[in-house]
Image (cartoon, rainbow, N blue to C red; front, side, top):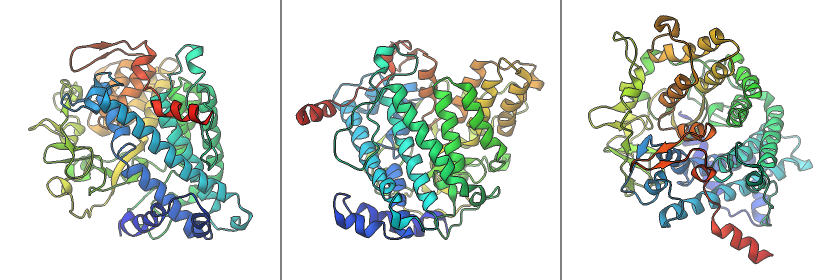
Length: 477
């Protein structure tokens, strides 16, 4: 059976039906390994099916802010794409992200706390349970840092206050950490998770299927060992520490657990899935009445079946995929876009185009990708860009030639950072990546209305912390 129907949904329903604030929750959930597994499935479900998290906003806000997509008529994400953080729509979005992220963190912390109970130390997979929980805590905080804290290049006084890093299952107020302090805790959680998840060296096969009969199967739907290493690589890359980023990216590459899909896999039925070769970590999710990133009747869904928002693609979306050789075409153009109606169809499987209740029966796992192997090769290419251009080109070509593009040796070009930026934009179009790279590089943004947002201003890249956060702290004090 395909991963989730039997494994994910019953467990997460049990978890989400219980409000974690009393002894009943504690007693019922953590007396067996299966209880820990149900709780973790619940966390993954929260991340994928909560609209303000990966259900929509964590992908579509960065896409709109980078201008990869525009939705001028939408008062929420459309206004955010114009650089407006404060009108009613964006204010509500900011509050929803903040609230739901920290609600999820509190649920995660309840799992972490119980992993240290003496009574559970004999559970067979207790290391996996705690490792995944710590990694999930780091992931959610990292997303908050990327949105609500200033970039690393900001002045020191602005970096003094980033976000609260919540490490205890509690409803007490947690002080804000500095930017360095928050990143330090994120990295510490991930490095401990890396140690605890060593079992994944044998649980993640090099050749994968979508079948699963237990918690240790289909590990690409869990924050597994290699996903932790890939996330560490992304974090160090985000901070401009290419040396450490390369260490972790190379670990993932050297594992030989992840390869590139063949040309035959660049067909529309494979859209909206976690690829059995390339995906390091992704969230199982399917269309339905809950929030979902998807496509239906030429509209991008930002909520349930009655809530849809249309997006337009950037004006250069098609030229972005042009190839130097007239004899070749970039496979991603025809696979991920519908040229006739100029829409992105990358994010949901074709079986759901007209009927969101259809049953998927393909070879991959339906859902949204969080980490994929091409990113690790791009990091290595950037790391060697100046010191070893030939080696940088090898890493770059390792990805692009599998996408139908010419190798640099064929075009006679020397790899540059601008070429890397464009290639990452091609590869991650619709996945919320481009804005974060523009933020890292202090790039100006020309909005759909023609306004230019200053890339050197931290205000361009930093969502204001919701007013309710300060109000709650003031009330407590």
